[in-house]
Image 1 (cartoon, one colour):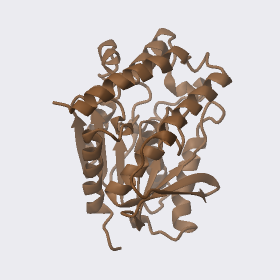
Image 2: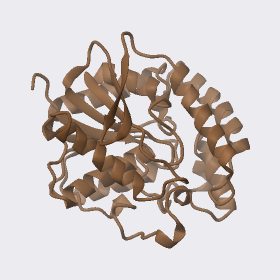
Image 3: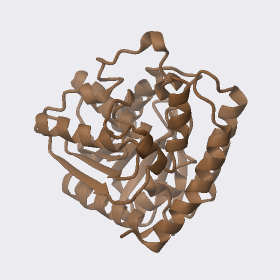
Image 4: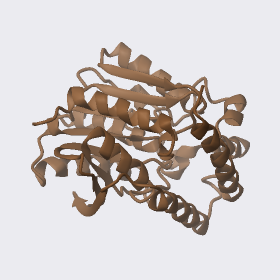
Length: 319
Protein backbone atom coordinates (compact mmCIF):
# COMPACT_ATOMS: atom_id res chain seq x y z
CA UNK A 1 0.00 0.00 0.00
CA UNK A 2 1.50 3.30 -1.05
CA UNK A 3 1.60 6.21 1.38
CA UNK A 4 -0.91 9.05 1.54
CA UNK A 5 1.84 11.36 0.36
CA UNK A 6 2.39 9.13 -2.69
CA UNK A 7 -1.32 9.11 -3.47
CA UNK A 8 -1.34 12.91 -3.44
CA UNK A 9 1.84 12.99 -5.51
CA UNK A 10 0.28 10.77 -8.17
CA UNK A 11 -2.72 13.08 -8.47
CA UNK A 12 -0.48 16.14 -8.62
CA UNK A 13 1.77 14.69 -11.31
CA UNK A 14 -1.21 13.57 -13.36
CA UNK A 15 -2.13 17.25 -13.67
CA UNK A 16 1.50 18.12 -14.35
CA UNK A 17 1.73 15.51 -17.11
CA UNK A 18 -1.57 16.62 -18.63
CA UNK A 19 -0.24 20.18 -18.85
CA UNK A 20 3.07 19.06 -20.34
CA UNK A 21 1.48 16.71 -22.88
CA UNK A 22 -0.75 19.51 -24.16
CA UNK A 23 2.41 21.33 -25.30
CA UNK A 24 4.33 18.25 -26.42
CA UNK A 25 5.21 17.54 -30.02
CA UNK A 26 7.07 14.53 -31.39
CA UNK A 27 10.75 14.83 -32.37
CA UNK A 28 9.85 15.35 -36.02
CA UNK A 29 7.40 18.17 -35.22
CA UNK A 30 8.68 20.04 -32.16
CA UNK A 31 9.82 23.64 -32.54
CA UNK A 32 12.72 25.36 -30.82
CA UNK A 33 10.44 27.49 -28.66
CA UNK A 34 8.60 24.42 -27.38
CA UNK A 35 11.90 22.76 -26.49
CA UNK A 36 12.92 25.94 -24.69
CA UNK A 37 9.65 26.07 -22.77
CA UNK A 38 9.93 22.45 -21.69
CA UNK A 39 13.46 23.00 -20.45
CA UNK A 40 12.54 26.16 -18.54
CA UNK A 41 9.50 24.56 -16.92
CA UNK A 42 11.30 21.38 -15.87
CA UNK A 43 14.30 23.29 -14.55
CA UNK A 44 11.93 25.42 -12.48
CA UNK A 45 10.57 22.38 -10.65
CA UNK A 46 14.00 21.34 -9.39
CA UNK A 47 15.05 24.88 -8.59
CA UNK A 48 12.06 25.71 -6.39
CA UNK A 49 11.71 22.21 -4.93
CA UNK A 50 12.74 21.50 -1.32
CA UNK A 51 16.39 20.92 -0.48
CA UNK A 52 18.01 18.99 2.34
CA UNK A 53 19.13 21.13 5.27
CA UNK A 54 22.53 22.71 4.72
CA UNK A 55 22.71 21.93 1.01
CA UNK A 56 25.58 23.65 -0.78
CA UNK A 57 25.93 23.89 -4.54
CA UNK A 58 28.95 24.94 -6.55
CA UNK A 59 29.57 25.15 -10.29
CA UNK A 60 32.68 23.37 -11.51
CA UNK A 61 34.00 22.25 -14.88
CA UNK A 62 34.54 18.55 -15.55
CA UNK A 63 36.39 18.15 -18.81
CA UNK A 64 34.97 21.49 -19.92
CA UNK A 65 31.39 20.47 -19.06
CA UNK A 66 29.54 22.76 -16.65
CA UNK A 67 28.69 20.64 -13.63
CA UNK A 68 26.80 21.25 -10.41
CA UNK A 69 28.57 19.94 -7.32
CA UNK A 70 26.03 19.31 -4.55
CA UNK A 71 26.79 18.42 -0.95
CA UNK A 72 25.34 18.65 2.55
CA UNK A 73 26.95 18.40 6.00
CA UNK A 74 26.49 14.62 5.68
CA UNK A 75 28.41 14.42 2.40
CA UNK A 76 31.85 12.85 2.36
CA UNK A 77 34.09 14.78 -0.09
CA UNK A 78 35.94 11.55 -0.86
CA UNK A 79 32.81 9.58 -1.78
CA UNK A 80 31.79 10.81 -5.23
CA UNK A 81 28.53 10.12 -7.04
CA UNK A 82 28.64 11.23 -10.68
CA UNK A 83 24.94 11.56 -11.48
CA UNK A 84 23.59 11.98 -15.02
CA UNK A 85 20.18 13.65 -15.07
CA UNK A 86 17.22 12.36 -17.05
CA UNK A 87 15.01 14.12 -19.58
CA UNK A 88 15.02 12.01 -22.74
CA UNK A 89 18.37 13.50 -23.82
CA UNK A 90 16.44 16.61 -24.88
CA UNK A 91 15.65 18.35 -21.60
CA UNK A 92 16.65 18.33 -17.95
CA UNK A 93 19.75 19.85 -16.38
CA UNK A 94 21.59 20.04 -13.06
CA UNK A 95 18.97 22.60 -12.04
CA UNK A 96 16.00 20.36 -12.86
CA UNK A 97 17.45 17.69 -10.55
CA UNK A 98 18.76 19.98 -7.82
CA UNK A 99 16.06 19.04 -5.31
CA UNK A 100 16.45 15.30 -6.01
CA UNK A 101 20.25 15.23 -5.74
CA UNK A 102 20.21 17.41 -2.64
CA UNK A 103 18.38 14.67 -0.73
CA UNK A 104 20.34 11.94 -2.48
CA UNK A 105 23.63 13.51 -1.39
CA UNK A 106 22.41 13.98 2.17
CA UNK A 107 21.00 10.49 2.66
CA UNK A 108 23.71 8.56 0.80
CA UNK A 109 26.53 10.56 2.38
CA UNK A 110 28.10 11.33 -0.99
CA UNK A 111 29.19 14.44 -2.86
CA UNK A 112 27.11 14.50 -6.04
CA UNK A 113 28.29 15.93 -9.35
CA UNK A 114 25.59 16.56 -11.99
CA UNK A 115 27.00 17.34 -15.46
CA UNK A 116 25.14 19.65 -17.83
CA UNK A 117 25.86 17.34 -20.75
CA UNK A 118 24.87 18.34 -24.26
CA UNK A 119 21.26 17.78 -25.31
CA UNK A 120 19.43 17.05 -28.52
CA UNK A 121 18.14 18.03 -30.93
CA UNK A 122 20.94 20.61 -31.11
CA UNK A 123 23.58 18.00 -30.28
CA UNK A 124 23.26 14.49 -31.63
CA UNK A 125 24.84 11.22 -30.53
CA UNK A 126 27.65 10.66 -29.55
CA UNK A 127 27.85 14.13 -27.94
CA UNK A 128 26.13 12.88 -24.77
CA UNK A 129 28.39 9.83 -24.50
CA UNK A 130 31.48 11.96 -25.07
CA UNK A 131 30.42 14.23 -22.20
CA UNK A 132 29.72 11.24 -19.98
CA UNK A 133 33.23 9.90 -20.47
CA UNK A 134 34.89 13.33 -20.21
CA UNK A 135 33.23 14.15 -16.88
CA UNK A 136 34.19 10.82 -15.35
CA UNK A 137 37.81 11.03 -16.50
CA UNK A 138 38.05 14.63 -15.27
CA UNK A 139 37.19 13.55 -11.73
CA UNK A 140 40.24 11.28 -11.88
CA UNK A 141 42.70 13.32 -13.96
CA UNK A 142 41.81 16.86 -12.87
CA UNK A 143 40.33 16.43 -9.39
CA UNK A 144 42.58 13.64 -8.15
CA UNK A 145 39.94 11.09 -7.21
CA UNK A 146 40.67 7.40 -7.69
CA UNK A 147 38.20 5.33 -9.68
CA UNK A 148 37.18 3.39 -6.57
CA UNK A 149 36.08 6.66 -4.94
CA UNK A 150 33.53 7.20 -7.69
CA UNK A 151 30.09 5.74 -8.30
CA UNK A 152 28.12 6.68 -11.40
CA UNK A 153 24.41 6.60 -12.05
CA UNK A 154 21.37 8.51 -13.16
CA UNK A 155 17.68 8.42 -13.89
CA UNK A 156 15.85 7.59 -17.13
CA UNK A 157 18.02 8.87 -20.01
CA UNK A 158 20.68 9.60 -17.39
CA UNK A 159 20.56 5.90 -16.53
CA UNK A 160 21.14 5.16 -20.19
CA UNK A 161 24.10 7.54 -20.18
CA UNK A 162 25.54 5.85 -17.08
CA UNK A 163 25.32 2.47 -18.79
CA UNK A 164 26.85 3.51 -22.10
CA UNK A 165 29.56 5.50 -20.31
CA UNK A 166 30.41 2.35 -18.35
CA UNK A 167 30.54 0.29 -21.54
CA UNK A 168 32.70 2.90 -23.28
CA UNK A 169 35.13 3.05 -20.33
CA UNK A 170 35.37 -0.73 -20.46
CA UNK A 171 36.06 -0.56 -24.21
CA UNK A 172 38.83 1.99 -23.52
CA UNK A 173 40.35 -0.26 -20.83
CA UNK A 174 39.96 2.62 -18.38
CA UNK A 175 39.65 2.11 -14.64
CA UNK A 176 35.96 1.52 -13.96
CA UNK A 177 33.88 3.18 -11.24
CA UNK A 178 33.25 1.39 -7.97
CA UNK A 179 29.54 0.88 -8.64
CA UNK A 180 26.54 2.05 -10.64
CA UNK A 181 23.11 3.11 -9.30
CA UNK A 182 20.24 3.46 -11.76
CA UNK A 183 16.79 5.01 -11.26
CA UNK A 184 14.26 3.85 -13.86
CA UNK A 185 16.98 3.58 -16.54
CA UNK A 186 16.10 4.02 -20.21
CA UNK A 187 17.93 0.85 -21.13
CA UNK A 188 15.76 0.07 -24.16
CA UNK A 189 15.38 3.21 -26.32
CA UNK A 190 13.83 1.04 -29.04
CA UNK A 191 10.79 0.53 -26.80
CA UNK A 192 10.61 -3.16 -27.61
CA UNK A 193 9.92 -4.43 -24.08
CA UNK A 194 6.78 -6.06 -22.75
CA UNK A 195 5.70 -3.01 -20.74
CA UNK A 196 5.39 -0.76 -23.81
CA UNK A 197 1.63 -1.21 -24.10
CA UNK A 198 -1.45 1.02 -24.26
CA UNK A 199 -2.49 -0.30 -20.85
CA UNK A 200 0.79 0.73 -19.26
CA UNK A 201 0.67 4.07 -21.06
CA UNK A 202 -2.67 4.67 -19.33
CA UNK A 203 -1.08 3.81 -15.97
CA UNK A 204 2.17 5.74 -16.51
CA UNK A 205 1.27 9.24 -15.34
CA UNK A 206 4.44 10.92 -16.64
CA UNK A 207 5.54 9.13 -19.81
CA UNK A 208 2.19 7.70 -20.88
CA UNK A 209 0.71 10.80 -22.53
CA UNK A 210 3.96 11.52 -24.35
CA UNK A 211 4.39 7.95 -25.62
CA UNK A 212 0.84 7.89 -26.94
CA UNK A 213 1.70 10.90 -29.10
CA UNK A 214 4.92 9.23 -30.25
CA UNK A 215 3.10 6.04 -31.23
CA UNK A 216 0.33 8.00 -32.94
CA UNK A 217 2.90 9.68 -35.18
CA UNK A 218 4.98 6.52 -35.77
CA UNK A 219 7.96 8.34 -34.29
CA UNK A 220 10.71 7.33 -31.85
CA UNK A 221 11.78 9.17 -28.72
CA UNK A 222 15.41 8.55 -29.57
CA UNK A 223 15.01 10.75 -32.66
CA UNK A 224 15.58 13.70 -30.34
CA UNK A 225 19.26 12.78 -30.17
CA UNK A 226 19.95 10.16 -32.87
CA UNK A 227 19.22 10.81 -36.54
CA UNK A 228 17.43 7.87 -38.14
CA UNK A 229 20.26 7.38 -40.65
CA UNK A 230 22.66 6.87 -37.74
CA UNK A 231 20.56 4.44 -35.69
CA UNK A 232 22.28 1.11 -35.11
CA UNK A 233 20.32 -1.13 -32.78
CA UNK A 234 23.27 -3.52 -32.56
CA UNK A 235 25.44 -0.75 -31.12
CA UNK A 236 25.46 -1.22 -27.35
CA UNK A 237 26.69 2.36 -26.95
CA UNK A 238 23.27 3.42 -28.24
CA UNK A 239 21.16 0.51 -27.01
CA UNK A 240 22.83 -0.76 -23.82
CA UNK A 241 20.79 -3.93 -23.47
CA UNK A 242 23.16 -5.27 -26.12
CA UNK A 243 26.19 -4.63 -23.94
CA UNK A 244 28.67 -7.03 -22.35
CA UNK A 245 28.65 -6.52 -18.56
CA UNK A 246 31.15 -9.21 -17.66
CA UNK A 247 33.67 -7.91 -15.11
CA UNK A 248 31.71 -4.69 -14.63
CA UNK A 249 31.24 -3.18 -11.17
CA UNK A 250 28.09 -3.89 -9.13
CA UNK A 251 24.92 -2.32 -10.54
CA UNK A 252 21.77 -1.35 -8.65
CA UNK A 253 18.40 -0.83 -10.35
CA UNK A 254 15.27 0.81 -8.95
CA UNK A 255 12.08 1.00 -11.00
CA UNK A 256 8.38 1.64 -10.39
CA UNK A 257 5.75 -0.91 -11.30
CA UNK A 258 3.59 1.74 -12.98
CA UNK A 259 5.86 2.88 -15.78
CA UNK A 260 6.46 2.11 -19.43
CA UNK A 261 10.15 1.58 -18.74
CA UNK A 262 9.49 -1.29 -16.32
CA UNK A 263 10.57 -3.86 -18.90
CA UNK A 264 13.77 -1.87 -19.54
CA UNK A 265 14.86 -2.67 -15.99
CA UNK A 266 13.57 -6.24 -16.11
CA UNK A 267 15.47 -6.90 -19.34
CA UNK A 268 18.62 -5.27 -17.97
CA UNK A 269 18.41 -7.49 -14.90
CA UNK A 270 18.38 -10.57 -17.16
CA UNK A 271 21.44 -9.27 -19.05
CA UNK A 272 23.32 -8.73 -15.79
CA UNK A 273 22.40 -12.23 -14.63
CA UNK A 274 23.63 -13.66 -17.93
CA UNK A 275 26.96 -11.84 -17.58
CA UNK A 276 27.30 -12.72 -13.88
CA UNK A 277 27.51 -9.04 -12.96
CA UNK A 278 26.79 -8.39 -9.28
CA UNK A 279 23.53 -6.49 -9.07
CA UNK A 280 20.67 -5.49 -6.82
CA UNK A 281 17.20 -5.07 -8.26
CA UNK A 282 14.18 -3.38 -6.70
CA UNK A 283 10.67 -2.85 -8.05
CA UNK A 284 8.70 -0.19 -6.18
CA UNK A 285 5.05 -1.16 -6.09
CA UNK A 286 2.65 1.52 -7.27
CA UNK A 287 5.37 4.01 -8.13
CA UNK A 288 5.63 6.08 -11.29
CA UNK A 289 8.62 6.87 -13.51
CA UNK A 290 11.49 8.39 -11.47
CA UNK A 291 9.22 8.91 -8.47
CA UNK A 292 12.33 10.19 -6.71
CA UNK A 293 11.55 13.65 -8.11
CA UNK A 294 9.04 14.06 -5.28
CA UNK A 295 11.26 14.22 -2.21
CA UNK A 296 8.23 14.69 0.03
CA UNK A 297 7.20 11.04 -0.24
CA UNK A 298 8.31 8.44 2.31
CA UNK A 299 8.91 6.11 -0.63
CA UNK A 300 11.50 8.49 -2.06
CA UNK A 301 13.36 8.77 1.22
CA UNK A 302 13.39 4.98 1.60
CA UNK A 303 14.61 4.61 -1.99
CA UNK A 304 17.49 6.98 -1.26
CA UNK A 305 18.31 4.99 1.89
CA UNK A 306 18.34 1.86 -0.29
CA UNK A 307 20.83 3.53 -2.61
CA UNK A 308 22.87 4.63 0.41
CA UNK A 309 23.12 1.05 1.70
CA UNK A 310 24.17 -0.16 -1.74
CA UNK A 311 26.87 2.47 -2.01
CA UNK A 312 28.19 1.74 1.48
CA UNK A 313 29.12 -1.74 0.25
CA UNK A 314 31.07 -0.60 -2.79
CA UNK A 315 31.92 3.02 -2.06
CA UNK A 316 33.15 2.65 1.51
CA UNK A 317 33.49 5.46 4.00
CA UNK A 318 36.82 6.63 5.47
CA UNK A 319 38.76 5.99 2.28
